[in-house]
Image 1 (spheres, rainbow, N blue to C red):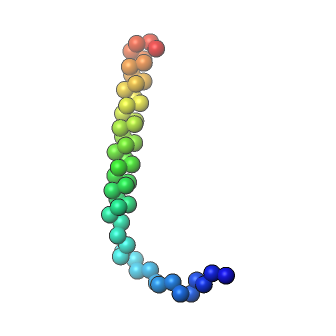
Image 2 (cartoon, rainbow, N blue to C red):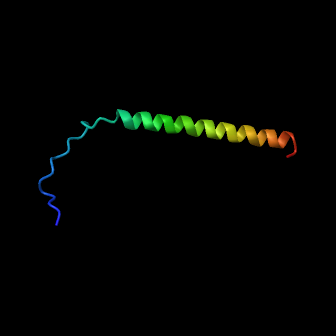
Image 3 (tube, rainbow, N blue to C red):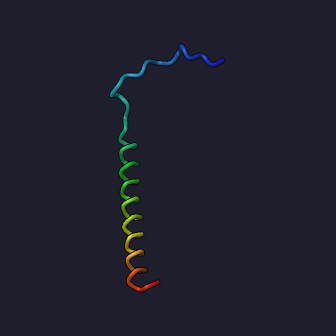
Length: 50
């Protein structure tokens, strides 16, 4: 079985989360673009009676 007793103790606030923040910012940026483009397509379709 796995040995769970030899793991180091975690210290709160010491993890480097810079890559996580960059990834999340990219996800939010991409989501904003997708929503904006989707709304633009819907407005275009409504105006052209497509």
